[in-house]
Every structure is written in structure tokens, then in C-alpha cells.
Amino acid sequence: MGYLKNPPGGTTLILDSDKDLGKDQFAAKLAKFVKLTNFRRPEGARLDYWIKKEAQGFLNKRISKEAIDLLKELAGIEDLVKLKNELEKVSLFIGEKKDISKSDIEAAIGKSANEDIFRLIDAVSGKNTELAFDIISNLILRKVKPHEIMGLLAWHFRKLKRNPELLLSADLAIKRGRLKPALALEFVILELCR
Image (spheres, rainbow, N blue to C red):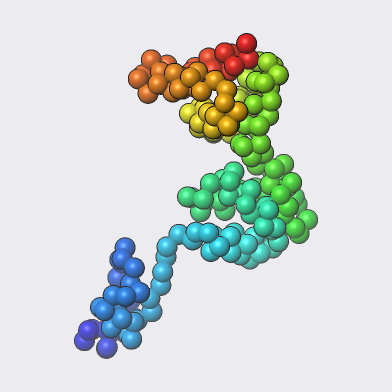
């Protein structure tokens, strides 16, 4: 503590901890002499606030709550750099316009995977194999993994009490290494469209 009470001029001391320092006695003593800064990744309302501030400060744009929610769904919430890059992409897409809307996010980044899953279910229900494969190709190009698509399909079909055995057997074939995920997904779609 002596060092902190009288540090040499021009020095900076950085201490890093993964612990929550709110109740730590040592941190409480340190707080009298230093500035404590929390660098945790923002979550929930703090993440929404971060996105809004990035849009305002860096891009000079306003963004609606619906646009924030869709941006988080499409870009994910784990990687702040990816979120910021996608926000920049939308900003460039809308040009001089000051407000970022949900439709701007859809146009610049793409539609929600869930929305496409509903379209996929409609295509399968209508026995439209060609449309179903187009939707799957689009989802995979947007980096939605085949097992995620099958999981969403399984969730929807469980609600409709339809073909759970088919999806279960495809899932087992993937897990046992008998089929690659993309191929298993194609077989499922072909069977569902019969």
C-alpha cells in the first residue's frame, strides 16, 4: 500500500482480476488510492445502451429498440467487434439517413433465421422441395449451421406433433458420424417434402 500512497511520477500500475471486486476487502482498500474500472462485456440493457452509444457517437445515427434486437439476433451478442462491424455496415447502407430501423437491419444484414425457418416449414408443409432447399442454402450462406436449422425444425415440428422420429434419427446419424450435418439436413427436407 505504501507504493500506492506515494507512487513515482509518470508511472501507471495496472492490476487485473476476474473476480467481482464489489465485496473484496483488498479492493475496497485499493479504491481509496486508485481508479477501479470494470471491463466486463455488456449484457442485457447495458448491451443495448452500448449499441445505441456506438450508433450515436461513432456513426452519428439513432437506432430503434426493434433494430437493436434484430441486430443482436443476426450478429450475435458474444463478439462486440462483430456487432460494431455490422452496425457500421448498416450505417454505410443507409447513407445520409439518420435513423436505423429494423427494416434497414434486415436489408443490410439479412432476415432473422427464425423468420426463414417459418418460411422453410411452410415450404416443407407445401411439399415445395425446391423452395425448401433455396431457404436452407440461404441460411447456410448466412452461417447458420445445419444442426441449428435441424434444432429449429425439431422445435417447430414437436409443436405440430409431426415427424419427430425423422429428426431424431437424423440427429443420431450426425452424432454417430454416419452423416455430415448438411447431408443429414438435406435428407430430412427430402423426406418431409414427400
